[in-house]
Length: 589
Image (cartoon, rainbow, N blue to C red; front, side):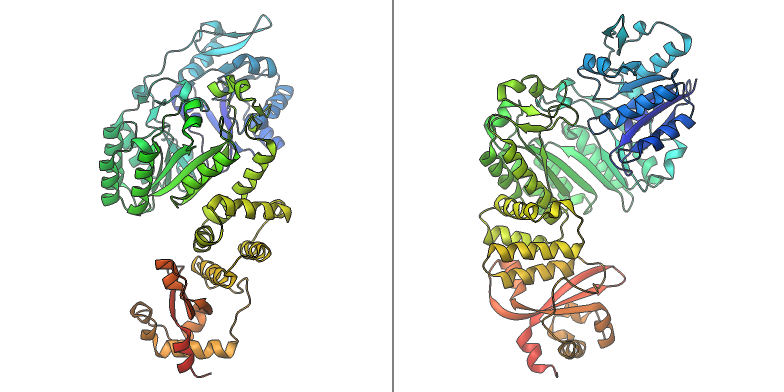
């Protein structure tokens, strides 16, 4: 019997852990083929490829991001291959099962919940012609009505075979994100999350997981993401895994975790700050809301004081990248309350703030109680909210504008120095800056077109000019610094017009070649001659003392020469400053 399992990932770099577990669990009895696509791939191309594999049984792993794209594929397959058995599984179809059985008439079976053992037993029943009624964990139409068999006991995770040893995966390990789980389940009961439905946490064997990670690193995996819902729920388990990864990681490997910050023990953070190499770990932390009443309504326990301690200690350690999640639209969190939540979290000034919008997922407590808060939401996946009793659709649209510019101007780290100055010295708060800029961005129609890096600087400058901000020349100088310092190579044409003519620039560069020690010892150590300065250095006048502003926050009006060296070997930029008066009085123009 020819069996194919398939899914549509959000992007090519993502891989489906579910397909690999199904394939490994069904072996050696069934040699299951895996077929992965993306939600952007043309449907005809996907159907053609699946058809060419000539499957007798095909299974689709379904999530909110791919279910609506998967349905037309199913419908086409049924038309061109009427005898095929079509099976669905995954979190999107495991809840509200009668809805899916009735809606998707072309589907033969739905695997409910944990799928490995159920899918294998279902294949056996299909192949032998046995009654599927005897297979626990399956739903299908029977006598014209949705029917569900008995629930299946949970798997013993210590007996699940490895999903990582397939030959066809090895060549792509360095190019894609490798997902791994060391546990299943979640100890919390957040009413907006599917993970809360599964009670209890089960663990894979830790020594087996270490061997898997060694294998993945040895074969080229560079980004390994743990999908455990709360990786640090057991301090001893998390600490042992952190120690292992620190001691045995290979150069260039990055590990990502979803952690709960307010239960992270101080001794674990201290250990990481002392021993972890910079950039080895990345923490994703779901804050969602800092409104205590809202958190209570969604049954979310969160100690913001302890969360703050964790986030700031990790931040100050400088070793671990952090990504904090927010959800707009939670119960009784109106626009002003969400503004406070956003500002509370942005105040940490960590690397990424992810602003998302509540999705009313099937099976969650919040969806079941939607009427209590007058929720209006999309009928089809991803079920995003359109409003509730305290947050209007107009306000949701406003917050979406915040999300748009937040991604481009903070999370992508194109101009951190400038944005920090604007938030600290120009606008009332971080939210107010992103909201005002987002409104301007939308009004200009920029949300519907593409952007080069130079465009982003020009558009921020246009906004600030029209907004009439004070100290615009200072902000322009910070923008120039941000533009230079994040370049890998010397840019050909910056987004602004230089203040110096070519003759003046040449005289300044000649002086810097002859007197580099006047800038700093570190600049002198570069050993750059005049020819190299012309090739790898850019200079620009600033009307303020850049170092004092960046290091102490004080604005001192003083003409300063910004010197940026673009290292061709390291492909990075480094900045230096010198008094413009000093160099102007000594350089021969």
